[in-house]
Length: 99
Image 1 (cartoon, rainbow, N blue to C red):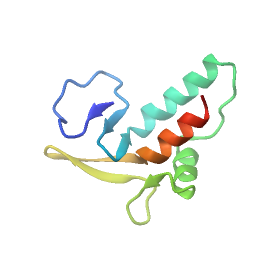
Image 2: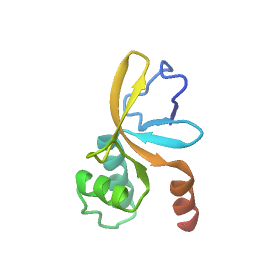
Image 3: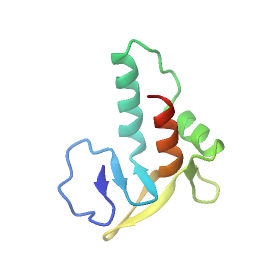
Image 4: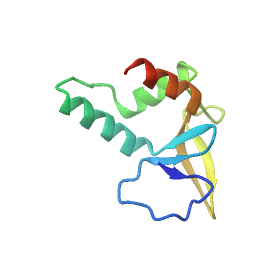
C-alpha cells in the first residue's frame, strides 16, 4: 500500500492502492486479481466477479462510495481516480477474525 499523502512515491507495476489513517483505497482490478490468486494458492475457489465483490462490500457497509456508485473518486496530485474505498477499521477487524 502506498501512502495517499505522498502520491508521487515510486509506484510498483502492480501496486494495489493507497492508504491513509482512515481508509484503504484499492485498485479494483489488481485487488480482485490478488484475492483470486491467493485463493487459488490455497486451493480454494473464488468465483465472485470483481463487480460482484465491490457491490457486496458496499452493501455490507465496508466501503465509502460516491452517490449511485460502488467506488469513490479520489484526487491524487493532478489526477482524479476511482478506487474501492475500504474503511480501514472494518477491514482490519475482518482480517483479525480470519487469523
